[in-house]
Image 1: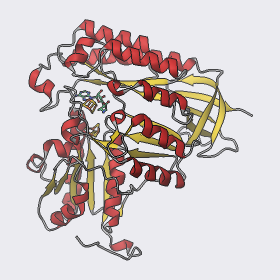
Image 2 (image 1 turned 45 degrees about the vertical axis):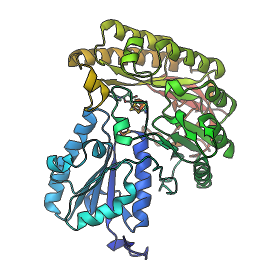
Image 3 (image 1 turned 30 degrees about the horizontal axis):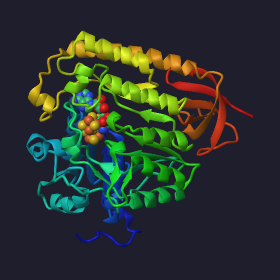
Image 4 (image 1 turned 180 degrees about the horizontal axis):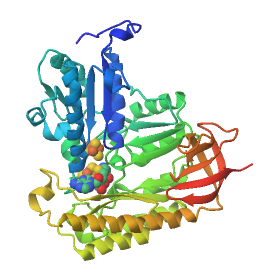
Length: 449
Ligand code: SAH
Ligand code: SF4
Ligand code: F3S
């Protein structure tokens, strides 16, 4: 397709695209890739839904309520389209991939559907949609990593970099392998080039992303995740490095050693466990037991003193008993996570759990167990945060506190949010502060002299 305009001054006539992003960080990172593909073709990226010529939703399908949110949004867009019939509405990402062109029948407001591996074809799909056709591309790829595309990152402190796509794990409850396809890793050289670029642009923190980030492997250079992380962190050791999401079975000793050794790799690990019961973990096809998981946690705590760990928990998975649930609560007590993302099980079409198991835990029991998990974790988080009082910690300033113009907000290497009165330091600086108070998930501090 022809580029729409080669004169960048003609901004008024450029079609405006507004993209709303839902779901995980991979989706937010994908939106930056889509911005790049579209602005190269002369589209103008707009922050304003109401003046846009094209509205895209980059969607999540991981739980039913994520999809319901999108259905609701599409109803709103239908109202906007009534007043602007030339508006093009598209659905991108995981829900597009899961439901494919069935969505055209269910949602007449839609003009375009594009799955996560088809973003290079967006300009063509838009052209078809503008010609009045319903346009879809939901082909998954074995190779696509968008390695050569320069994501359009919003200026700021923290940047995402996607290093692998897809997932081969096939956890029984999870739709991701179906929406994002087979696992593939981007070449090390393209990642390192991007890291240099990110650092030259002034970012102070890089989050390395993948659905199963620690199973990264670059065939060409024979580099695994620990090696890659070490090289990334060596590019500039004043820049903080984070990564997500790790799978427990790929959390190797070598990786833990690398995090311990490299001072700028943050001391915060997100390690989803899902359940504290080995019976549940087996049914979930997680590939680890409670004991093996706890062994990894012990290694992390031994090798990286002070490292904080967070997790994901699902309550009410198929056949979960009260005893299984109690094991999840006792695992929370044993690990003492800093934070947990908690979900009631939501059956997903075409997953092996949907096919082979029964979603037999009643909704109110799932919910009650979820509340118990949340309550226990909330108490543990509060207790852990209290322990920080009196400590001096290094904080990377991200911006103004939401609550007060007179306060900075930043994060510790352990990913805890800290607010403190503004001083001569500014956004992007690292400062030492002394913790005075802990409220909920925020630490209150004063700057050290
Ligand atoms: N690749 C990542 C992210 C997967 S989705 C990982 O392995 O952790 C993020 C979280 O959503 C999962 O960890 C799981 O806790 C939750 N989740 C996934 N499928 C779900 C389902 N069907 N019902 C409820 N929660 C689910
Ligand atoms: Fe889903 Fe499991 Fe893959 Fe995570 S590791 S994306 S939970 S299949
Ligand atoms: Fe959702 Fe897709 Fe991410 S299903 S969690 S947006 S990989």
